[in-house]
Length: 295
Image (tube, rainbow, N blue to C red; front, side, top):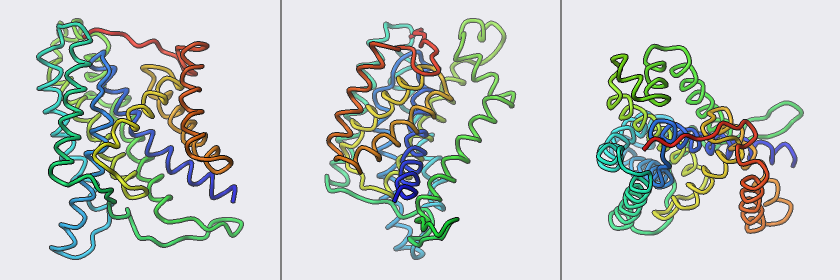
């Protein structure tokens, strides 16, 4: 029972980590909160839920692992569109202008999904199969949970490698940390911002697909997901990529544990109380790095 709870918490935390990573990437690049991020996660889940049946009609059942690269690509394109419409025209304006436009983009995504697909819950196909594997000590684990953890780990490692060990990653970090200095050094800051939005949106889409094949997704799921991302980065530390992963794993473990011991509504209430306490007692988070606003 305990091993199963740990596995469930790790799988949920892995998906939450992708949500929080995309959120932090855009926060660092734009210096403003992207309130459409939760709806981008929803859009990724909906894409998986739509592409799965379409592929099944054309060639037969297709696992979610095959759909994942296509979802990443489509969501990266959507991220570029969001940046072009809701951020770039307003980046010299006060941050509240970006807040409002990203909220508007989120509402458009919700209403678009609701209009095109309806409001009923949908599920994406599983990453692999619906079978189980036996681990050490005779513990039986769903293949789906292990596949979600593995997929998230690969994507997180890929992001760490790109941002920490490649020329493009150094240009992306420079453009996010000091746009004026980066521009003076010849770095195309606008292109870097678009690339960051694309990566953040792609990770949101991946998280949406991973969550939608464990749970159902609806057009209005984004509000809850943006709050989870907000809590994760607040617990881990604003602007900190390792903090975002740590915060996501902690809140997922907390949510699964309290839900099993008491109930899901109690777990949600306790999460929001934790957010309040963190803001009062340690606003910089566990791996604190204060967010800088430049928008």
